[in-house]
Length: 119
Image 1 (cartoon, rainbow, N blue to C red):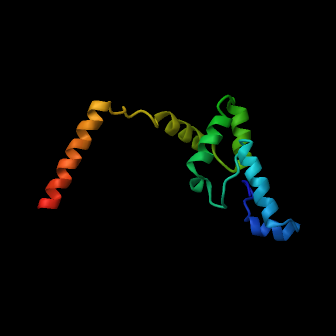
Image 2 (tube, one colour; image 1 turned 60 degrees about the vertical axis):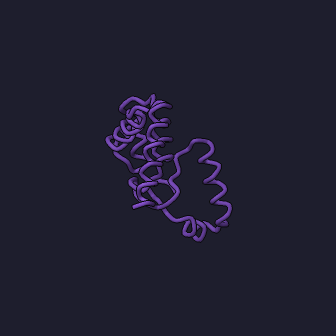
C-alpha cells in the first residue's frame, strides 16, 4: 500500500490472508494519523495533492539527512519534495480579488451572457 513496495490492497489481502476491508480500515486510520499512504499504486506523480501536502508538512522540520531517509522509505527524491513544498508555498501567490473587483467581474459576466443569448 505504501512506497517503495506499492502493492494493491487485493494483492496484499491475498498474500497475507487479511480481509480487504481490514486493510482499507488500516489505511484510513493511517491517513487520519497523518501518515502518508498513497491511495493507489501510482508512482509519486499519481499522489493526490493532499498526500503531497501531508508529506511536505511531515518533513517541514527535517534536516537534509532526515529528509533523504524519509524519501528513501517512500521511493521519492528529495528534489520532488522540494518542488512540492515550493508549489504549496506558491499556491496563494496570486492576489485575491477584492469584493468590488469580484462584483465588477460578475457584472461583466452577466452582461456577456446576455449578449450571448441575444446574439
